[in-house]
Image (cartoon, rainbow, N blue to C red; front, side, top):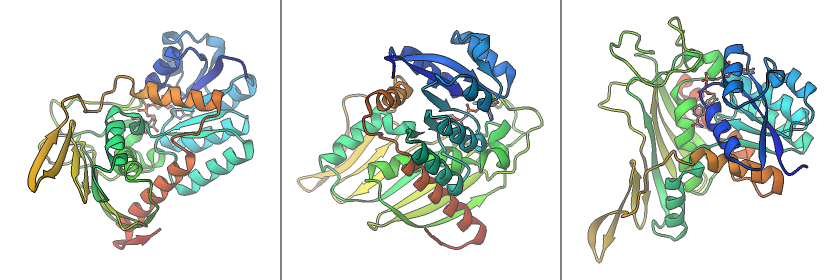
Length: 356
Ligand SMILES: NC(=O)c1ccc[n+]([C@@H]2O[C@H](COP(=O)([O-])OP(=O)(O)OC[C@H]3O[C@@H](n4cnc5c(N)ncnc54)[C@H](O)[C@@H]3O)[C@@H](O)[C@H]2O)c1
């Protein structure tokens, strides 16, 4: 493989910019080609990142056939295109970084893993929170035994009025609402920090009461590039769930696009035998000193910083591809997350616990 790898990005919407900025800053990468089914988007990103029009594509199969020199791709499409684009790229012999959630469901995720095994190429999943400065601090403290045994955690990602519209609300393209979009981030981060234990059962409930709140006045916030004034909304608007792991630990999950709460909330709490912690957004630690209950804050900044977050993830992907180092976000973890999400949706549908 040449010193600089040639990278293509499939899906040129909102998140592609974070991948492209990081690739652009990496001296071992050439941003070589782009693809989006939306001509306007592929041309916009092409102009921004100096990708010539002859290497801007509207269909990934054609791009992969025309440009065998591509080494690796980022898949940044809406969720329903993750599996087909990833499998096409793997079959064409490319390494793949696929955005979260890995796929629409575990069945698709398994077929992506099968394609990766067959091709012998890397399939990494974009669990970007694993690369956060806040995750590194928690990991360091956990490894040092500061919390003892962590037996319970809360993974929360609540928005008051945050359905991005477009494909995000459309079940056929997203696979679900806040659980698959937001919950996936905090469930993965919590499970990862607690030692990646195997999930054994889930119980969950979803709600569809407020939909995408088209009646809200003076609304602002993140909008998908695919959002229109006529978006459908057939996904859940909130979810609550419990996940039990094989070591007896339990994670409680709450996620919403729309919910009547005071303000958006993205905190994660850990409860251990020696201490507890809240990442909200700075790290707070709840412990004891000589029998006195104590609350500890770090003097250094410990809140999640977006500065360098995606760069850490992309640089790791590039290092995995070029140097063959072990991948921090293997596809198997993406599959496990999809099994958890499938189970929660199934539990919500039936009203019963689902054994995984
Ligand atoms: N890691 C994170 O923090 C994070 C944040 C936002 C989004 N995401 C993920 O990134 C993905 C994209 O989200 P987004 O916010 O950029 O959405 P977006 O709507 O802004 O962009 C998605 C783009 O994919 C394109 N697309 C759809 N199907 C395609 C196909 N078959 N081939 C090529 N292009 C195709 C669309 O035309 C659109 O331009 C989603 O899976 C989402 O969950 C991750």
